[in-house]
Length: 240
Image 1 (cartoon, one colour):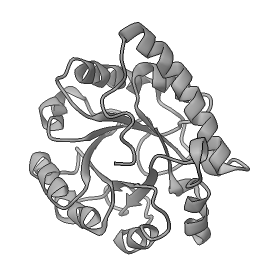
Image 2: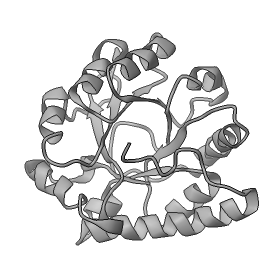
Image 3: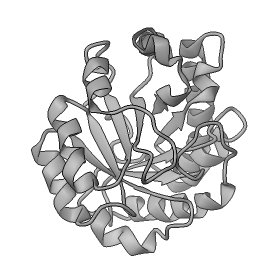
């Protein structure tokens, strides 16, 4: 699954930018990744719920809202209520992540939990039993265009094992520095969904860039599946 990040899109043309990856066939993104930053949890400031509500009217590609904000327990359910398909909160910011997951699902979205590059996966394995998506950050959250941190792939591999053995039932998503040079190693480690910003919106044809990234990931994950036997649970469930 490919989830282009509109953090790298032209903010003056967001509707058109989403349309450019909402085509047919391989050129169609699985999700649109929306980075919400509040200037507190992370130093940058981007967009909020009013813009997300507007984006929901531009296409039928599901919105994957990544909330890099303080107090997600209070603010995150509003994104679910507005129609976002997947709402991801940060483990480091949530006061009661299990209750928050329940509230997000009750409000109509899937629940995602994100962890920063230095946050241990082990601390949240039990919590993740209540979530639909694990978003592993492969850069420090807050800014686009950063370089991929390969060390986080150890957490991806650990999460993949937990899914493959039935301890968790979720999609493994990665965000940060994903491009033609890094997507294959992420796919081999066990990622199901790849957030890509500059690699899509820096391309001449964003739709073709989506298709090319998907082909690379599928080829690399095909090698992994040949070794392990089988596909990841929910990996084809992007359009819900």
